[in-house]
Length: 210
Ligand code: DC
Image (cartoon, rainbow, N blue to C red):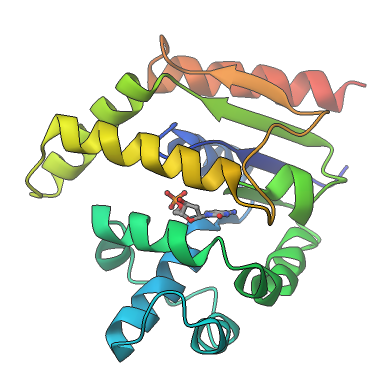
């Protein structure tokens, strides 16, 4: 069976960490689709163009190569917020679908994480995991991550960011964040990385056995 795993979840839920661990474990390529939206936003900011300029946003999205992301520059707090804004533009989402589906159809399999992977990008993925955690836990994890990179952190501001992003990502009309009917929800609020990884492995083997 080809190993295709769709992982969705809200900002800072731990889905990225989980996806990277699973990719290493199964030795399959991993695509963090949040980076596509972050890179699109970064391109617009670099050109000094508004984030709601649909034409320019589509042009930037179409020009992205999946391989050359400068992670560190894209991972910051402002870029997450900007990404959430461009990600609400249906034309931008449409421009990014083919590249994501091509990645998903690699013969060796793929692990893809984002917001709409199980619902829109790979509705037929045999394994779908919806990773979530309480907003406070997510803000705490984001604070640790940013502090680790030397960014200043203000917990209240991070929590506010997360709520705003949850709201925007869940309420947009185009491919909103939601749990696919056949996804298994993994709540990592009370789980460490190892425990979450073990739980995810169990979900994968449970699905593979069906
Ligand atoms: O996962 P992330 O924090 O890197 O994502 C940044 C933003 O990009 C997120 O707030 C919404 C958007 N996004 C999306 O709409 N669809 C995806 N598949 C991935 C990310």
